[in-house]
Length: 81
Image (tube, rainbow, N blue to C red):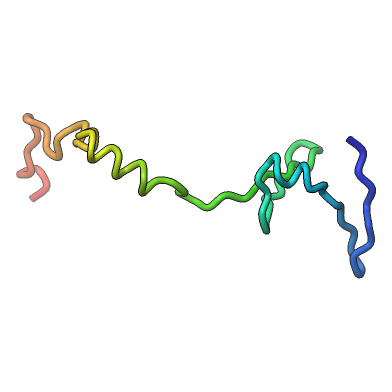
């Protein structure tokens, strides 16, 4: 897709169509990634969005148990003294 640059003060910018904004759920900010000669625009999402809901569901299902104990059976704290 070809997109024309537009003047914005002393800078240049691009316009994204309403269709693109809706399809990729772009709100107020985007993430700009510069990678190997490419400019990548990604929708900016809130860090850890949805984690609280997932943790509650894990707790309800009993899936929030530790995978390993804090102390191993053959571990000795005496060597740290």
